[in-house]
Amino acid sequence: MLGLQLPTDPRWVNLAEKTIAEILIDHAYCEQKAASSCISLIINYPDREKLVEVLTPVVAEEWGHFERVMEKMKERNIPFGRKRKDEYVEKLISISKKGGSKEQQLVEQLLINAIIEARSCERFKMLSQNIDDDDLKKFYYELMVSEAGHYVNFVDLAKEYMPEEYVKTRLNDLLEQEAEIMRNLDIRGDRVH
Image 1 (tube, rainbow, N blue to C red):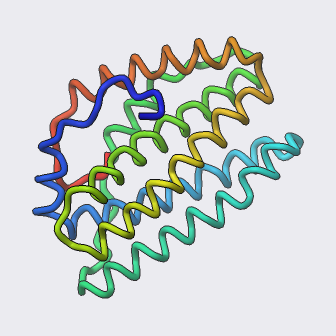
Image 2 (image 1 turned 180 degrees about the vertical axis):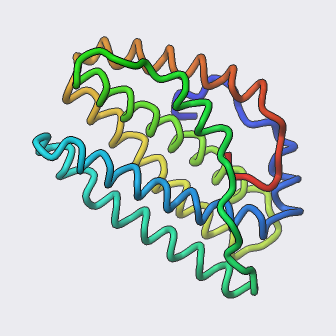
């Protein structure tokens, strides 16, 4: 799905369903970070008109997702809780190339964001198809569709700033490394990633 080279272990969704409160808390923080990441890109690259144009509504959408997750938590009397370390995202960021031109740095950030969206999309699809809670099934289906759109936004933006062949090659390299990260992470049912 969306270029991912290693699917999530199916045991993840079983664990996640048993700890759905923890998933919702982690998910809320993921949506905050997604909105913040887009805001940072806009702040760091204000001269890239296409980037600002594409990511401005994504910021609003990600923040809207945060608000919707918070509503689901409130309906279930789940307190927000503390932010957790996102080992998956930290490892992804650590594999991004340092240095290079400003365009190469921008493309690295866009592609890392694309991969995070792809993995979120995959996980939301698993939740929408496998959990018993009908309300959350529908909720995660809607978010799956949205995350897939964000993945496309990030990849298309990368192609605005570097040649398509460069973007494809670099994305494939990153996806291979992401698969290796996934192989080496513990399966945790209390995290989205």
